[in-house]
Length: 615
Image (cartoon, rainbow, N blue to C red; front, side, top):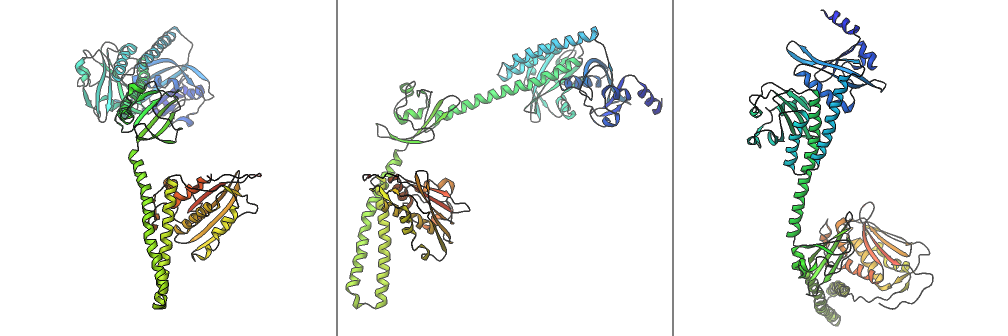
């Protein structure tokens, strides 16, 4: 028969004839197929035909795999028309053979009436699918991985009628048999090379199911007497190949229904194995967390909703002197800070603890972490002593400098004019610097002891800002100073002298940390019940992690070039202490465009002023 005659036969056929290559690309789409499905040959030749419903993809793949190994499959199924309607069709599928090679598939479709044979096959498939649902439920109820894999292998033989079954894991370039049913126990844990295995062959085809009946004698499965066919289904976890199911047949031959069930079970096997793996990971994580909990040098406690201890690690017992038996079911032996805040508390033993807590919203439980900061507290007290001692010792050189200045004053006539002026200038500058340092040290010590004396009264903050900025433009030819104060700025409650110190320090820092010059901007405004003053510079800026630390005592941040400007780290500590002593607050922020913004907020005076005692 020549090609013209073959084409005429296809065109005249009353049945829809479709030929596919091995990748399921349409090779032939005859006129009856056009009439039945609504697509023309010109539209589908060279493409995959969109006629198989998604829920029947496994059935379709199983049929093609079955006919590839020989024989023909006829089944009643459903297919889509172009207009979206679903057709009940019978599909006869056979291999497309050219020479001695299978190059594709031929499928003949035609509409059918229900017959008893189709009903029987459908009923059998329905029973097996229902049984598959029960099997999957049983498998998913088990979370121990090896038990899951053994149950999968046993369920495989029940559903497909196979004589034996196995599950292999893909481990890099090797396979390992981890689940088996009706196979010699000696085969368990056997390994094989992935590339030369049936699994490797299946992966190279890009399919999820495969039948093989040739060359089985060299495989480990050959220990099953009479083995003639292996059905193989790929299992994936998270979209990646995880393992494979082997159904071994020695007495009967599998059909397309068995292959469909194998593919479906393999898919569920991947899910069940993934659940079991996740469960094992959770167990390992809990074990690790417990090890960290027990080994932590910090005290860790877990409290229930009412605040009773339900977990208490060994370090908690060592730090507090209370063992787990003493505190379980009771409140902890120290107060708790609000979540996200820190509380420093001294136990009756004299030990100081830093306590933090965090709430677990899902359970309502609270995790408490506490550590020994006794040494840090002692160091802090030593710093206080250092401040007091240093400020005392500094008075001696100041006295000497001032005495020397007096001597110069007394012997003025015996010295040359340039000598007198140079000496007086040097001594005066030294005395001023030492005096400022002493004042800072004394203020720092008083702030640390919470002994800053401020007088809370109403004063005009606008006047204090103008006084603090008066003459600043002449201090540096590289800086410009801009002051913006609106009319009618409310008075504030606070200490005018303390505020002068705060503003002076903020302005000094603005000049100091903008060595290349730029704009120093001072602006004030009313904000709710506060009056806010900001000092902006275009200088080095402060790293986000240091914007709160710069207000601590003795802190000189290490970021950028700020360290090269020296200082003892008390200026901003004093600023914040003085601001808070007045009921105000000061904070550091990034300036838009670069540099630093220091923000001072003081309480605005209400319409009815009242005298407030000194505190």
